[in-house]
Image (spheres, rainbow, N blue to C red):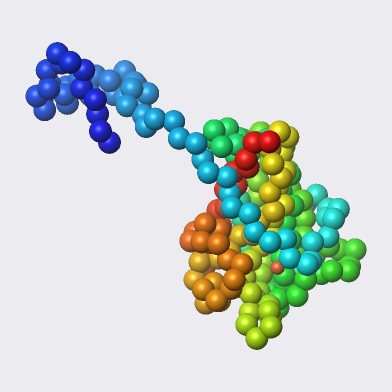
Length: 197
Ligand SMILES: [Fe+2]
């Protein structure tokens, strides 16, 4: 971090550390030297694919009792200025552990809508999606998203998982959507930034 030193201030290291200590003691160090405000880039969009179903139920458990490795995904929905988008709706759908979508049943397995809380936090529990065939290749594991909030542009995108061997061969993957914190542990973080209208 570069620190601007006011003209006339004693710039010896000792004096500076003393001054910094005073700021810290007063709880002012963070405020005084914080980074300039940055605008967050909107999350990249991605193809919807053929398997979206409207009107999935509002729920945070998408695959209750179904076979597969447990996966918990959470994150914040944010405006580009970093403010939380409480009440944003996060509509997700994905394939089963065997790579199959529930396209017909009234259970809407592996599908659901969750509403972000006042802090913009959303979370859902499901099973790790499987890869599925795409011609002679496979699509890497992914979760589809549609996210909407007042005064912001609706976003259709996908979450991918680092380490999937099919990531490099899939024409739809975007690097910014590959989450490295989604490996193995079963817990995954995926923040979403929506552009303003
Ligand atoms: Fe898909």
